[in-house]
Length: 369
Ligand code: NAD
Ligand code: TYD
Image (cartoon, rainbow, N blue to C red):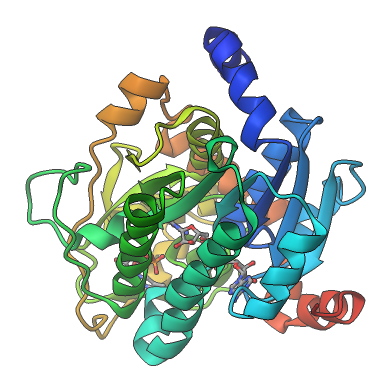
């Protein structure tokens, strides 16, 4: 699909590429989604210099980028988006043309336990980056700041309806409130300072490299180790799941062709209750591990519900489909099978992550600037 999309885009795509895509700064590139975006940009855009700025928090793992770490158009920089002096130096040292901003604290449960880390990175860090761009960018017409956000800013749906780009923001967790706040600030910089921006709000991602605190990799990890799979409440909450590569392809498209000042919703039209999803995953895992059918399902354990647990998210992605010709490439069954396959083939990745070994290795290799 991608090569044909590129052909359809033709000249316009080429022209845009020459302006804000010479040197791009991708933040959070060592994380789950960021690593897929980095690989895609480094591989499909050899003429673009890709800088990966990441602090390597617990969620950042350069193991995710081992296969492209020596690519000539790729460079890793360890640093914190909360550090304004560092950002100022970075924008002086490199002539950055475009930013794809993914660095964030990303887990709702952690935001309930420690909201301040989310306020700092997600809100203050985003404004720091916007200010660094404002300070460094003289000709705004050739630049672009792209903020990666979540559908959780729209709040919680009842049984019916979909989030559109016009849905009023109604965030309910410290995580979603921090992302909503940063979205508002990005838009404020567009209106107030003429900063060229785009924003996308995506549904729940799954796929390789996802940290095993999120539902799907956590369940895979626990099934592998015959540990209980915790299901919050009754497991009736609904999420719309999108394979991470499909999100990365949408990000590439929006960065290349998105209309400035605009928001794009990205989703899979793929709603699952948590319990149905976990039952499907258990069946796939039993099959792949050649276990007696029903073995993994016995691990399902209902636990206390998450505080303020949003009931349902679902996305109307008509705009990106019609304007940018994007569609998810995989069904959920295909994506989930591929994901399970990846985790089974990368048990060492999972072990390094759960033991914390990845952190001491990469952190000592890269000093924070
Ligand atoms: P992640 O937690 O896997 O990765 C976040 C990355 O940001 C890590 O590599 C971490 O080291 C880095 N980081 C954190 N704080 C930093 C700081 N202060 N300075 C520099 N780097 C820092 O997150 P993810 O799931 O890949 O999500 C990436 C982005 O996409 C986030 O902005 C998130 O809100 C958004 N998003 C995620 C999903 C999802 O389902 N995972 C869905 C929609 C939107
Ligand atoms: P999660 O992967 O944390 O993503 P988000 O909260 O951003 O949607 O959770 C997905 C759903 O799974 C959500 O409804 C909470 C639920 N959940 C569990 O039931 N058990 C778990 O152990 C986790 C981590 C999540």
